[in-house]
Length: 295
Ligand SMILES: C[S@@+](CC[C@H](N)C(=O)[O-])C[C@H]1O[C@@H](n2cnc3c(N)ncnc32)[C@H](O)[C@@H]1O
Image (cartoon, rainbow, N blue to C red; front, side):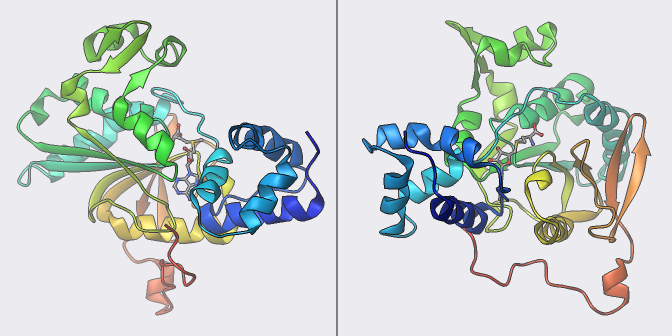
């Protein structure tokens, strides 16, 4: 297949940034070629150059969406990185259960949920360790930019190698049903989770006053300004006494100073500061992007 010209690379980089805020750095031509090869083949095109020519000929088609989705990295696993889930169990949920005793409701958001393992891990943790929550209204929202990955999450069907990563075998047999060589999430877990498409820079189908947000391993794909915008949007959706988990290499520090970090065992969570610096200074920046709403 002919390789990607500089102009075509610039077109793809711009498209992906506009639609997802993902930054494709210079030198990623090989990644773009590899990720788009299947689309070139499926469309019956001869080269990636032909694909870009077709994209340039129209705007906002399903093909544009497919190209953006192909450039997302959907790497995930059950109980990924373990420590945030430990802290959720030992500190975050016990504190929230005490504070929400009169409402008897908890809402948790797995933002950029990929194929759903993070949301289902949280659901297992609730069911496994918090019998006191029986009778509470519990909702775990999972959203992701990619429609295809959201459908996978909703289906809750996993291959052997996926359930073999991070999922204790006792939980596998308790919460999943084997269907051929796949494992499918059972109803008691599935009914806690609700998956929808949602761009972190666009319309987000989640309620306000969320208790916990897992926003892990997605800020790394964004530039500084987008990270700041996303963190402010999340802060607006989180309850003032809510909790935010980021990925192991992600932080709010130096990006949005309206959070404070709380060390919990071997992980950290972030909480909205009572008086965000920008608000105190009377100069709060709108968390909503000025550019057109991304779908
Ligand atoms: C590496 S996965 C992280 C999955 C999970 N949070 C975890 O830590 O295991 C990153 C996910 O972010 C999603 N993503 C990228 N840009 C996004 C955006 N602008 N809005 C919503 N999701 C986005 C991708 O589709 C991908 O599924």
